[in-house]
Amino acid sequence: MSEYYEVKNIEGKGMGCVALKEIKLGTMILQEKPQLKLKSGSWSFQDLLIAFQQMGDDEEEYLNLSNRFENFDDLIQFILGQSDQKKSKSLNMWTKGLKENLASFNSEHREAVLKIIGIYYTNCFDDGVVIKISRLNHSCRSNCEYRWNEKTGFKEVRVVSKIEKGDEITINYAFNHSMQDFQSRHEKWIKPNWGFVCLCDRCEEEKSNLESDKTFCKKFDEIRKKAKKLHNENEIFFSNNLEMDQPIKLEKVMLEVLFYEEMYKMAKEKKTSWSFMIDHILDYAFDAAAQGYLCAQKKISDLDKKSDQNSSSVSEEKKKISEQMKKFNGKCESFSTAAEKIAKIVWGKDNRNYLEWRDKKNNLGNAHFLRISMRSRMREPYPGDPET
Image (cartoon, rainbow, N blue to C red; front, side):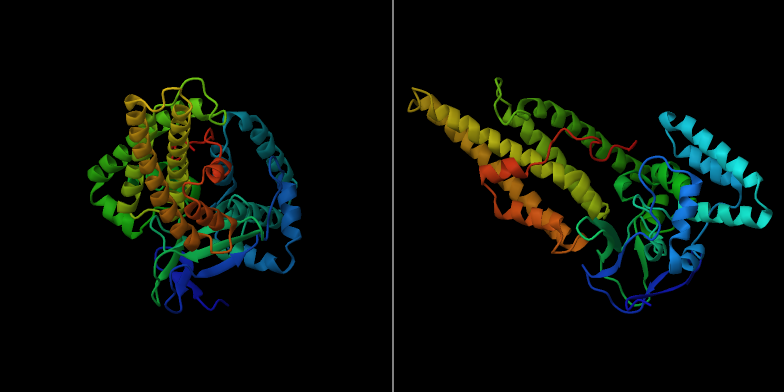
């Protein structure tokens, strides 16, 4: 029994979690390790059954979780729909083997096996099934968010907006796709993956303004694509520890930074997931601003080495670059301040991710720190790609 909520039937949703009292921003209401976890990569349904049998006292609670698959064909269609072409052959063999094994079971055994598999696919997160967290229903504008604590091995749920007594406690199953429009979010992610239509406040707002919602999210995606293009172009000049033969254009770096700034403003206007903001915007925004700062610093250093460094033209150039460097540092401060605040709420003050953002905020202008703290900028997938 939780001190924060009770599990009860919610009209139109089935079971869900309702707050027993007011819960403040940043409160961790749940901390849970996966009770059923499978090895990464390929696994058989026998592996799943063995993992289920090893759950011990959690078996009964697992079997009480929601199962969206009414029959074998629905389950198989879903599994195959989740695969890419590289996996389709092995999955066809997987489903064929499952069919053959089920044929040898009596009806009671067959129904039990299908239920275990169906519950797994209905409730599984990336790192397995976490029973209590699985009781939390989805909202596209949730009042809680979940993050993985690498140090403890727990998935943690924290409050991201004030919760009143009697409010339903929700998380965002599809927070990585928070800036897709209502129709795209449902057709590509929510309906195929979880089999329901979201009825949250955000969805109700967007349903009544479908065209403006689509226009807004399309604009965000266009800015995202421009930022991605600049991200890749700028990285070419920055990929070798600032030892570049061709100097980077600071204006292009600043343009990338300004695109991220606009994306962040739009995400806040949409009141979207804080995890989305930090993972898909602020991480990249800070790195781009730090890149600009370091490049500007190097340009000034190169000018100082020139034999005619005291000439008026060199002095004017240094003054111009110094102003650009100051602006980049200001952007670093702005992004790190926002990210530190968000990280403290969604991860907690003892989490490594929060501590990294705190250090970034406290070490502005420290070139050595910026170099070692910047993550590799040539990462895939790029933030917010609809297909990821």
